[in-house]
Image 1 (cartoon, rainbow, N blue to C red):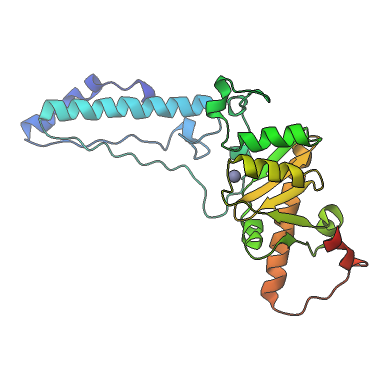
Image 2 (cartoon, rainbow, N blue to C red):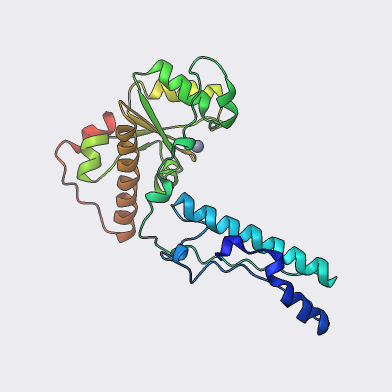
Length: 252
Ligand SMILES: [Zn+2]
């Protein structure tokens, strides 16, 4: 019998023993040492079938714990320990973030429908940008280094070669309510008529493109550029300008 098929009656002998010895019983599911835990992922497995198996195991174990408590007249602690996870720097950050069909929320551009309640609070910003710019895709992120830079300046001018070439400079815009307001949405759309990516101070980036990949590419380029700027500053030596015409970048 497999672990998702356990039933309280399979543990009747445990209850008989506990009653005879005037003991209570605790219980725990076992999310390890099993072929379905071969890669050390159970409830957080990427495989829906493996997740289902371990969810069922958790449910049957809770039922067994409830049976112990009821039979013995004392609470049964059902202790759940899940081994899933990776140490500080996961080897794989992409797969857990990969979009699944049910992550996509379809809603109308021009009016509300039933999808709206599930959509992001930035729905208004996305709609306004779609209607006022040539964007066919929008990527909104909360990149931590770019956010930190947005708190100390009015524009981000990358210093590395790649981002200097690709982005030139990224304006930072600001609204009193930096999330979900019509003022922010129209301010953003106006900025994105001139730039492919802008930062909302203290909040995050909005990038546009013809495809989602393109909009994401501008977003990751900005965060990489900010990370390089942060590292260059932390070295605490004067910056050696190596780019021809670099003074033109902040006039872009
Ligand atoms: Zn946001």
